[in-house]
Length: 60
Image (cartoon, rainbow, N blue to C red; front, side, top):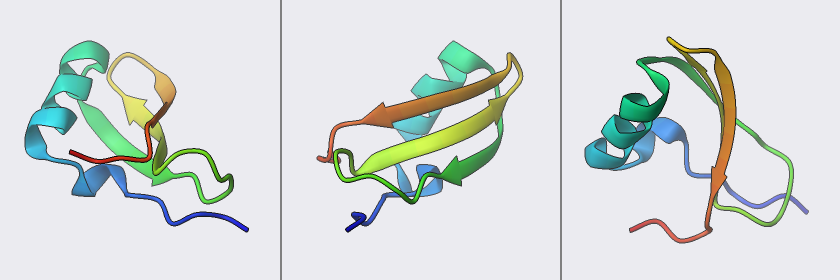
């Protein structure tokens, strides 16, 4: 069974900014639907490239 993911767009603004500071502007974020280990999993299209990321299941 897949878990419910938190979309990148729903992360706090300071978290999204920190990601953008590392990767360049985020142009697209696609939430990964499968899996069971992380509450946040997205593939991002950014200024620098396409990046896949995942964080802990807790959102602060």
